[in-house]
Length: 306
Image (cartoon, rainbow, N blue to C red; front, side, top):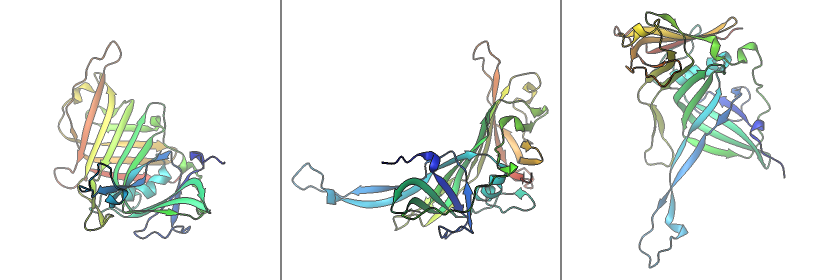
């Protein structure tokens, strides 16, 4: 008996509302750390009174199916080029990615290794990004978790496509925490030992008279930046300041990624003394469209050319 190990798993994504897996010309292959994408079908119990306490097998009927889950990967300049349009909605224009009112559909093909005939692949179609969390801490690579909602899950008993190949250039190396910098408030550039950027599209599956979603709808936009900074004289004057712009930037050699925020609204939270160690300030910021309506809550400039 052979072993099915996660190290052998593979993933490709096809940017199409009707992906035709395996399509080696249109698919993009990604390295990832873990995934929880799956279909969960509800079972509806239609049991009545039948003269027995026992539940009859035929009293279960299929209910709606929820297709959702997370994909976790390292944050790389080359991957951002293709994931940012799925996260924000807007297509790239000269390295700039902006918010759009609608999100594009795409498909995900996962090879989960164990063989059934010629292969063990699962296809997820009609996917959209509901939520994205980019996070990091001192001494570690920066990670990105995308939460997807899809329309259908299909088991494919066919071989995983041999191509495309994984990117191998310098732009495929992940950003590391020390390559980031935060600009905010009167102090300018901040020191910090952890951050979390959350982009939430509040996607909802529209279920009508069918077992699968008719549509995935982005209903809102929330952008939150949580940063753990030292409570020192340089940063303390920024406590509870008025709304102000800012940016989170990552730089690797000649490459860079800039998350530019419209107006950062500080969610007031005072620092606490947890003991004799350095006092930390949990700086919580919500990014919003600027008061003049000209600067979006978030815009990303991603220069992935090494």
